[in-house]
Image 1 (tube, rainbow, N blue to C red):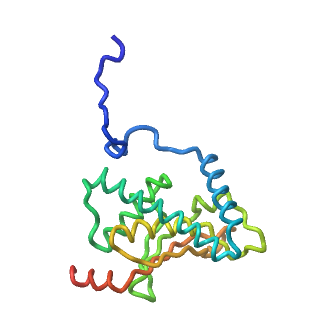
Image 2 (image 1 turned 90 degrees about the vertical axis):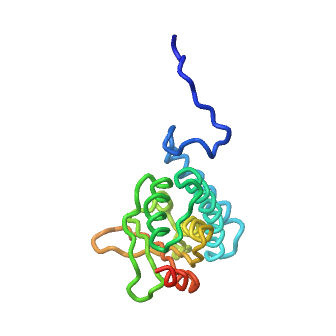
Image 3 (image 1 turned 180 degrees about the vertical axis):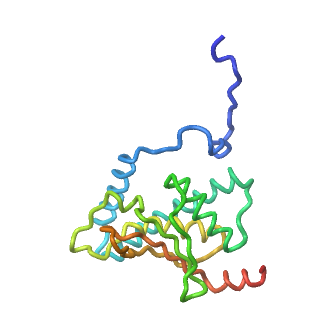
Length: 194
C-alpha cells in the first residue's frame, strides 16, 4: 500500500523541527513585500530618521520572534548567557535562518571595547532597493539592525544597533556593517562571568 507509514502529528507549529520542509521564501515575493513595507512607512513619516526608526521597529519584532523560535526548537528553551556566544549565534544561526548563509564577518571594534560589527557584502534588503537622491542617507539595513537588536535585547543583551554603508575599494556598491554597541551592564556582567 502507498502511504502506510505513520506521519508524525505536531500539536503546535513551534514543535515542528526547523530542518524539515521547505524553508525558502521566493526572493521576488520577499522583495515585493519589503518594498511595500518601505513605501508604506515612507508615507507615514516626515524624514529619513523616522523612516529608519520605523523599519528598525518592524525588524525588532521579527528578531524577538526569531529568537523565541530558534531557542525553542534548537536549544531546548536555553539561551546564550555569554557575549561571544550570543554574537556567534546571531552571526551564524540567525543569519543562516533569515538569509540562507552565515554573515560575511563578525569583528570586534578596535576603538571601543563595547563595539562589535557584523558585515555583509550584499545585504539582502539592499539588493533590490534603489534610493532616490533626495534620500541619500537612507539605509534599508535599519530593518536588519532592528532584527539584531530584537534578538540581543530579548536574550538579555541590551545594545544600540545601527546599520552603516562602508565603501569597499574596487567595488561599486558599499558593504553593509551592522554596528552593535552593548550597554555597560552587559560588559560588567561579562567581566563577572569571565
